[in-house]
Length: 64
Image (tube, rainbow, N blue to C red; front, side):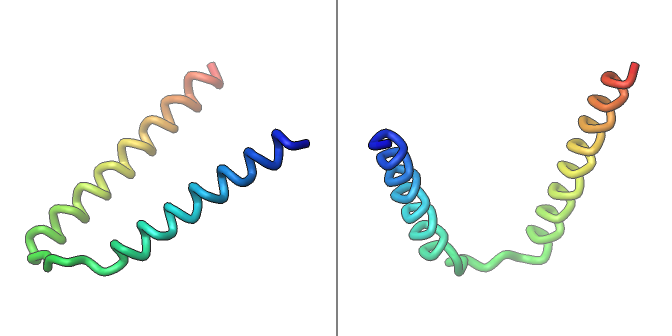
């Protein structure tokens, strides 16, 4: 069981590092213009559509 304990310790250390990074960048240092916000929203919607199409194609290929 020492191997399991060392793996858990390693994962816990990485999770703490991720939490530290998230705390550091929780508040943005620069302000975004309206055009940038709209562009990022459009990109997010586009990516969701692409992932949806990919999932649809995967499901249709599996059912054939």
